[in-house]
Amino acid sequence: MTEKIKEIINNQINEEFYSAYLYLAFAAKLEKWGFKGAASWMKVQAQEENDHALGLFRFLLDRGEEPKLKTIAGPEAESFKNMLDIFSAGLGHEKHITACINNIYELAREEKDYALESFIKWYIDEQIEEESNATEIIDKLKLIGDNGSAIYMLDQELRTRLYIPSGPYATSNAAKA
Ligand code: MG
Image 1 (cartoon, protein in one colour):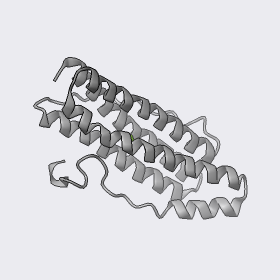
Image 2 (spheres, protein in one colour; image 1 turned 120 degrees about the horizontal axis):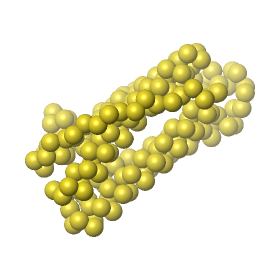
Image 3 (cartoon, helix red, strand yellow; image 1 turned 120 degrees about the vertical axis):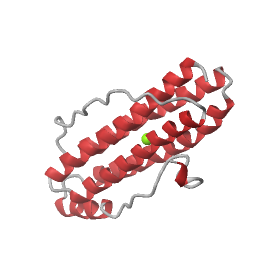
């Protein structure tokens, strides 16, 4: 594996752990506002992000490389005023992650690393879902506006999200992770 590829994957491990951290910061803020359902949704999302990081971690080890863990930055959640602000920031973050994943795919092709090219496709597909999930909730929040009882109902709906192990090894070989 080339140094460039090791570097980009180690960076992505950090991005995915940061994502988990960011969604936890969102969960903290939402729960402080009394939105326990939305907070729970964010905590499930954070668990999935942890799985995404571990998928990349596993890929490096399977290729004979040692993952290098970098410092995780502290997310900034102070400027948010409402649930719409938070989910919009989440969508913005997912768009950034999509760009990162696309860069990995491009590098895999440039360096003719076919194993990485195949592996990273799971993440490309996952990003379609991540952006679509966030967009759907944002659309609902825009529709609801400041209708308190509708916001309460949406919060109840978000509470129903369950954690299902995510990542490229989640269904095929969970024991490996
Ligand atoms: Mg992710």
